Image (cartoon, rainbow, N blue to C red; front, side, top):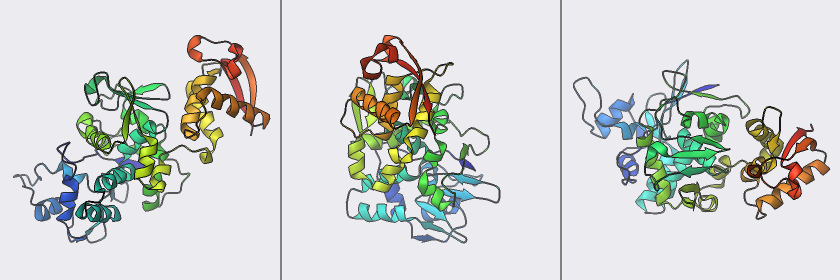
Amino acid sequence: MIIKMGTDRFWVRVSNIERWADILSTLPERIPCKNKKDIAKDYLHYKVDEGGRIINADEVYGLFGVEKSKTSVTIVGSNFIKENDDCYELTEGAINLLNNYKHNAAWEKTLGEQLLKYSLRVRTLALALLNGGYLYFEKGYMENFTSAYINYENIDYHIFSSKSEDININNLLNVYSSKVLGPFWKEELNIIDDEIIQIQGVNKEEPSLGSMSTYLKIPMMLFEYLNWLKEEADGKYILDKHKIKEDISEEIFNSLIFDVSLDDMEVLKELIVNNSDARGFFSLEIVGSFLKDKIDSGDEKSYDQWIDHYFMSSINEGRLRIVDHEQGQPRHGRGLFGKKDYQLIKLEIVN
């Protein structure tokens, strides 16, 4: 199924994280308007120019969820406001945010949770950063966007880049597009879980990259405020899996984690395809480390211990068979049980 994706818009000022809650608090649960412009003009009192366009209303449009027509489905925002047959309504996520905001009850976490649940670009970043990837800034957090990137499965994705020739956020989004869409949109759109998902732009095949650094820095600064980000090494940042797991619902957290229950052999197969040479050989340490991050990141064994145990257990159980092996280079790691002639291996996944 083709899902079209608009530009993710958030609140305008990075530090003004209460802005969306303030906007939603001025709206009734049922909004008798025919379109988004009427909501911005009549309920939120945004000014209109001579051409009928709402002035500076981008932050409002990010509150909406999905737009459907006879020929397409377009996700336009973070799903705080939904369209019904004859009106618009606040979603359950909006009502939860407003209740927590009114009572000053960790509403910032509720806001972050909604972004992780429905914003496709935010889910793209979270999937990478919760499953072995890291965000790199050369000169400090949120400094020098042109050189910043997410490294995921040994590929650098320039997520803040607006250049289509760069390896950008669209490339990362397409690594696991079904997982990016997530179970919550699938349920709302009546999409079966194993349906092939293709995410496209509104007017062309590739989603828009316009002003990517302007928009994406806003949720990333929210995550820093919530202490969901932590610096792992100089310039390298990851999402703190344990902190996020404490702060959001188990259902949303699990939707962002590659778990062994998702079929570890399918994950391994994809890792091998992405990290093997033309002959089918791959570094056991590199692929094994990625695999642990994806399916068993909570295990306290070291990477070397986990890799030795996982691969030998799978071989002994008949799930894997070593077809060939050879010595590699120092960058390929220690090899299975420290054997240099097992630094590079070729595997068969036994059905």
